[in-house]
Structure formats: structure tokens, C-alpha cells
Image 1 (spheres, rainbow over the protein chains, first blue to last red):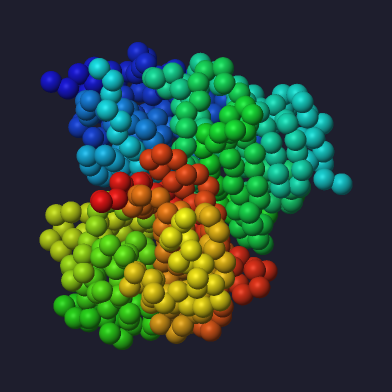
Image 2 (image 1 turned 45 degrees about the horizontal axis):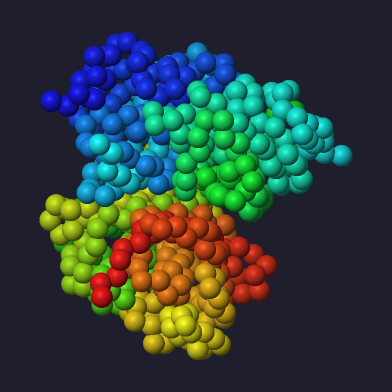
Length: 144
Length: 144
Length: 144
Length: 144
């Protein structure tokens, strides 16, 4: 039984409002789907997430990608804490206040010491990519 | 006269509370110093900026780096809007709630079409690097 | 008719020995398959491609990825020259002298000004990833 | 006494022709200077290093950066083998056949488990940056 994954799955269609991550609560993700190594969350662009020209702030895009990749690693239910070594974000197009974003992750490689995962941030109907990012994570044995 | 730079300089020692960027206001930067192509801002890690283990969320680190690099480009006073093509963040060490962060930028290359800038996020006394990131930006002629 | 793609396809099963790229000739790719936006080339690790511990030099891995991504853009038959803005390589596992490598590209996004493509370098039977990289390219109108 | 560094220093002004790295021998670096964590090598762009438009192939640029960063880590004389986790290359301007390149490294952070170093590739008189890259390396205890 994978308790972390089941926990996320219990929020499908709802905001993941019991996340132990204060910043994730700020992002207010709605769980769309959750499978082993593949999460899909939905976000609404709030005014406080925008830049001076009224579009989604690139820093928030990066934060969404980092956050859902972290949740993807957590959802594997492994006895590790994953430290992010780096992440890389490519920006493709803009989103505006009140737009719905759909972020979807893919676990690329899950090795003994390192893991690599990526995330595409789409517009609401997944017809347009907003950004794509990936992270390298280092696994640290969780304290018992 | 470079109005954007003078605007930022007028906030030295204070929070940059008139930023036209809603997300920058959320980050609550205090302007430490501001020169051509080199800004230094200070931030306090608030609880809502942390992850499940109580340390600064990597997404917020990425957001700070993206934001202050954007401000650095704005401070050049050029008639361009800078679109971020990508950014890359390397994470070095953790910060905790209530820690002071010092972010400092360097303009690496400012070409006709593209610009590259980097940012180091330090702990309060700059004895330890928390993260380092850099962005590639594409210059778009600002509408008159 | 897409002449560049047909040119590459005419070498399926053979070394792409008429490449106009001197460095590509040094890499000695064998064309495995070639479709719109998706090339698969095979390489043999020669001694001069190795590092001090006898494994494939990371610089050669990076060069293979950069080269086949460039070929992928060329194969689109567009009237652009693609300048690489940056590339990012993640290294997963080692390869040794005489090993066969299989590199396969995917065109992620092909916009009006920028294109993004990625490449996975596999071992000979694609059971193990050696590395993964992606590039951002800027399109420059080809001179007539 | 740091034997690796002294070894590199003994080649100042000459090609580093005894490198144990076959691919480094192909790059034919001339050692310009060598200090703790900071190497400067010079290269000549040979025809086999170029792309279809006669300029330095981006893959060779990436290979130079990866190689001299590896040499920088070696020159520290630590009892570790450094595995490159990833590298990121930003391309700024072109170089042509017979051009002299000057590559210079900086050790950014040298931690207990990870190290980060960067490299700028300049034109012959360091008046123009060709490219800039950086790598994250993971330290593996060298076998005795």
C-alpha cells in the first residue's frame, strides 16, 4: 500500500488542502489525476501570481513545476527525502490572470541515488504549452 | 537619466513596496543596493514560503531568482520588454523560516537580441550560498 | 517535398557520410530512422571519445546530443538556420569503448521564433538511458 | 603537494599532451595558466570541429567546457572521482576555423558531496564571450 499516493488520490477533483507544504497550500493545486510517477494538478492564476504586464510571473511557473515534481517524488512512497539538485525551466507562452493551468509530471529516471522528473505546464485544455521544466533530485535516507 | 534604476535606488533600505509586479510584492524584497546591471535585495523566509520539512521551498528560491533578474533587466532602462526564455537553478543549501536571504545579480551579457544574467542567493551575511541561477532573456521592442 | 529529410532517409542503415558538417562526420552516425521531427542515429564509442577512466567522455555525449538535435531541425526543411541558444545535458549512466549508442530526438515545440527539441542517448538495445539533453534554438531567416 | 595541479602547471605554454584522457588529447588544449580551482586553456578551432556553416560546432564548445571543468576538478587533487550530473551551456557568439579559443574555469562551490564549476569560452583576446557553461558534479570516493 502506498499511503502518500492514496492520500493524493483522495483529493481528485478537489484542492489538495491538507498538504504539509505551506507553499503548496499557497499555490492551491486541484488534483486532476494521480498515478505512480505521474501527477496532474490544476491551478488558477491569481493576481498575486502575475508580473508587471499582467501575465503569469515566471517565478510562479518555476515554483509550480518545482512543487508538483516534489509531490511526484513524495507520491512514490519511497523511504527517501528528495533534495532538488537543480531545475531547468523553458518558457514557451504566457498565461493571464484567472487562466487555468494544467501541470503534468513524468518520472524520467528513478535511480538508486538520483531521480529525474519533468513537468509540462499547459493551458486549461492542454492545447498550448506554457512551460516545461525538469529537476534532478538526490535521495537522502529519511530518518526513522 | 535612468528612471527605473533611480526608482529602485529610492527604496534602498526599504521594502520595494511600489513594484508594479503583484508577485514581487508577495516576495517583499528590501532593496540593499542597486547599480547598473547589479541589484541586491534582501528577503525574509515566511512560513508560507516553506516546504513540508520546514525549509525554504525550492520553488520560492527559483521565484526569487527569476524576479530579481527581471528587476535587473528593468533597471537597465532599455526600451525593451525582456521575455525569459529559460532559467536554470542550482540548489546548494537550505534556509529556514525567518532566515534572511540576500540575492545579488550580475549581468553576464547584454546583447542586441538576448541578455543573460545570473543571481546568487546567500544567507544573511553572505557566508553561505543557498542557490545560484541564471536566465536567458529575449528582448522585445516595448510598445510605444 | 522535404529534400533534407529525404536526404537523411536515403542513408537509413548506413553512415551519414555526406553530411556537410565536418564534426558530424567525426561522430560517424549511422542513420537508424528519420521522420518529421524525430531522428534516430547510432554511434560507436571509439577510444578517442573516452575519458581517463575509459568511459564515454561527457563532452562527446553533449556533442552527440547537440549534433543530432541540429540535424533534427535541419530535417524539418524550413527556410531557417537554427542557432542554439543553450543546451542542458543530464547524465545517467556510463558507456564504454566499443559500446553502441542509440540517440533519438523529439521535437518538443516548434514556434515561429524558437524551437525546442530533446534527445535521449540510450545503450544499444535501449534498455538503459545514458543521458538526456535538450536545446532551445532561435530561428534566423536563411539568406537567399 | 598537489601532484595533479603540478602536472598541469608543468605544461604551461605547451599542449597538455600527456593527458590520460583520449578525448582531451583530441581537443589539443594548450595550458595557459593553472591555479587551485582555476584553469585557463587555449584551443585552435580545427576544420573537424566545425558545423555546416563553417563555425565552431556547438557540440565541440560543450565538449571543451565539460573537459576543462573535469580537469579543474582533477587539479584539486582530492581523493574523489567526479561524476558529472549535468551541464548547461549558453551560446553567445560564433567562432570560425583557425580561431583561437580561451577557456577559463571557476570553481563555484566545492561541497562534501557535490561540486559546481563554470567555464567561459572566450575569443583569443578575451574581448568576446563565445559561450558559458556550468556543471554539477557528484563526488565518488576513488578506489584505493
